[in-house]
Image (cartoon, rainbow, N blue to C red; front, side, top):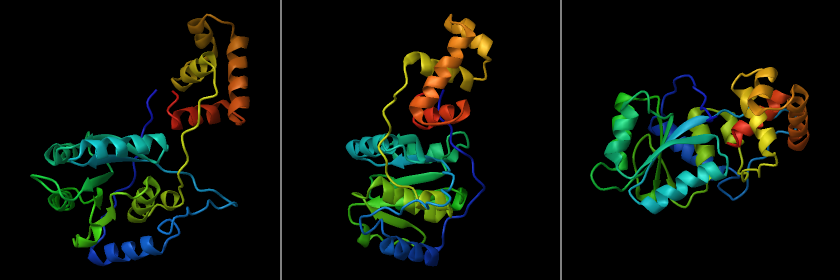
Length: 242
């Protein structure tokens, strides 16, 4: 079962003044100083998820970025990653492949990051664009916030949260993906339930008794530290185990 991104209401990218304010907020935030913003101990916010497109003409940088978002289980899920900005533009222009957030290198041959940003702003203003550059201080583009290429995934997610006005992203912090503690039978059982199958159907499919199916679920919940089958399924989906 593949993880799905959550659709959100249309949002506008910031104008020049808002972009400058965002830069100041990012510079003053604990993240910019090297520490994460802690979760509220009283009421943790539900974490929203968004689709992400990445553009960088350096294939090594592109691969590292794409892998890092997945490894850290970030709330920005990579929909595609291209070295060719023209290919990225075509993907953004197609509603079926358009991401909610685009992370783009600035200096690229052919269409550079500035041009991609202006095209998106003119045609798809709801797409949030974040620039990355080896020399971010030299990039002055009204409305476009540019981060250093060496920025942590956490910093990118926090900036996306500011631009999306989503507090759950601003409070997110890096956590390596958990190791799957479930047995193949436990994982298979939860996957079947996630597909909407009944206990009887799962028992027939796995060639076990219904009581065995229920036992697999109980063991999975105990290992994951959750109290219900639904919570166990959600945790498995978020960690890309099913």
